[in-house]
Image (cartoon, rainbow, N blue to C red):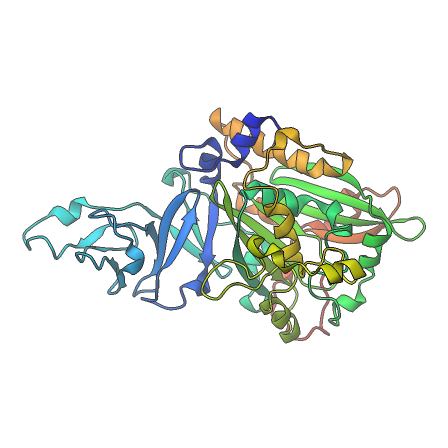
Length: 439
């Protein structure tokens, strides 16, 4: 269990909090590029690490991420006019460019130089992999953009969504790392939504998850975070391994079901009690099929249906995630809650916004959670001593999760070695599922 002091250290992410300072040393996924679909479009409110910000795409197509509020009378710039390479406050016409500089102040005399002295907070933005990334740390320490596999594949190979969860970010990370819950919470959940598709039907993996509900865990700490190996009994003499990747500071990679699209999450803190849950499916070898993309657009698997115009999910805490007690009682659904995403949200959010970890009781199946806490706590305490954070080097992101069968006695680090690293040569746009399979 955690002390109350360490739990506070893990979960507080504001500008003055030690963890907030650590997270600001990384590039952060702020929003999906398509949320700003064209120049001079409607701006988007974004809350990151306790800061209320506004994203807008200017006339030239560049993205700015600035303080949401005009410094004049503190009016929200969300209601501003996005025009002629700037966001203009509708109250008195003050206008700001993507760097936060005031470039027009029509309420002041023409000869005034006051506008040159006014600049609002802004953070640099870059686009990669259909994502607008921002860096909120010291400018002189800005690293290279992340090279996570899902951000490098062609757009046709990837599907991304994000939603808001009502809990702290680390509570969500712990759920992503807990491989033992797959046998219960997600029983009969449909193989991340892909059950019944041609690619998924090639996999024998789901049966191992229900046959052996008490996996044995092996943790391998690495320079970018850790690998979590969960082994289950398979056929005589063999073990079924699910190897989850945790990449600092908030990425988890879900072990794939053989030939189906891969899955990953980014758990980005909005504030101490809310998190943007990013959900990504991709296939490094081929474009997603129309069938797969339709499944994901329907909010199945790790994705969820949203209330139109919001990032709040249709299934949520206020309506008990639309639990179907009849389906649960009949055995048709283990939880009675439809979808992996909603099942995860239910158990992560109902612990409370910040669960009291000082009173929990952990078992052997919680090894990954314990290790992740130590990694994050060590990183934040090291930063306070002037030691640079891990996983800053973009090359350290070139890893994959994996699921495979290995003979008993073969360490997963050896038997799965080639499957745990990205293969840049795989990033080709192959339209037909018949031409190649996922490694």
